[in-house]
Length: 173
Image 1 (cartoon, one colour):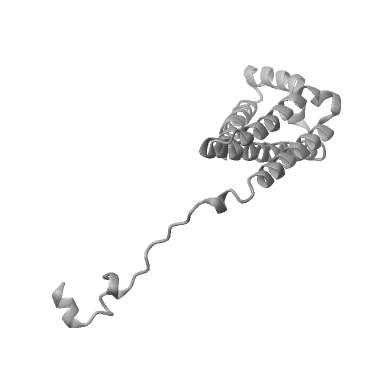
Image 2: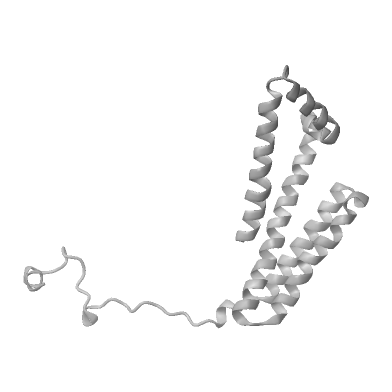
């Protein structure tokens, strides 16, 4: 899960926030030559930055779906990888590998499929990977022995808090 949050939160989220804050700071002074150059570059290279809300909202929705998909896929892959290392079962790694490979394999086809269909297909792959990971590892935790703390009783030295102790017991300690 740490890998998913690092990628989604820091590498994509924070760096994109810095980019957009820089764009805003530069473009907020429209009379400068840097602002005019940046505007012409962005309007050609990334015209979606200047879309109205009706055109931008679907793109924001796809971006959110992409990040949720990434978290699901990273969780499934990471969960299986950790269990493969802890329990030394290669089957977990063998199942984890195709999850990431299939998503990476589909990426070059995104322009051919269109953004909506591509994001849906990748989301289905991530959900499928998560379901397979959870089904494969069902009952893994139930095989572990659970140790509990001993129950506190007067026989093993527990006297309660000082308000419950008698004055004679308090003088002995």
